[in-house]
Length: 220
Image (cartoon, rainbow, N blue to C red):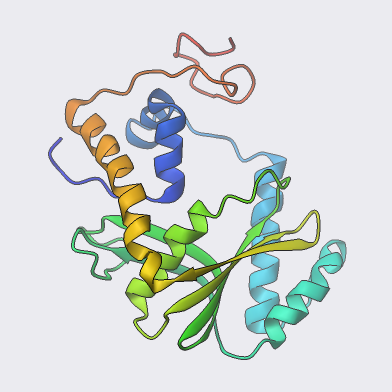
């Protein structure tokens, strides 16, 4: 397999968690992950907030607790871009999300653009487990490749269960550090594809959360 492999934050982290599971789900497609209640809820929340901010459509009754943040985002000044699909090629040039030459992909739930500044929002529907902004740093760097007018971003995770945001700033000058972190990780992914080596890596997900039943660690 000499073909370059397109990657995203989620694809890369899935590979790093367990190469065997990554291969079975995303390459061979021998298994698929069923859409559980948490995933269904997450999709529902994302869609409802997208329509509220972009189309001013009312939130469903059971999600009205999110109206304060939805109203704040919808009322903010600036160009609002919802569900932005971003992609670049190997030369870090913007390309179509499904282009043959795509190298890196990212999706931003909401961008509010006031050049030279922007706010990038990622809705999180699970439990707040950390203040790690690595995922949004990649998204911010990708966004800046697509919009040269933007030089600073406020990155925001909005934790819907807690009704609280966590924020951090990002500047264009930080982009090289993002690539310095991610490109070696992506290289390991490409090497695994080239060698067709995807070893099983036992971890805390094996016992209850892995669908790859052919793995020797499944259920352990």
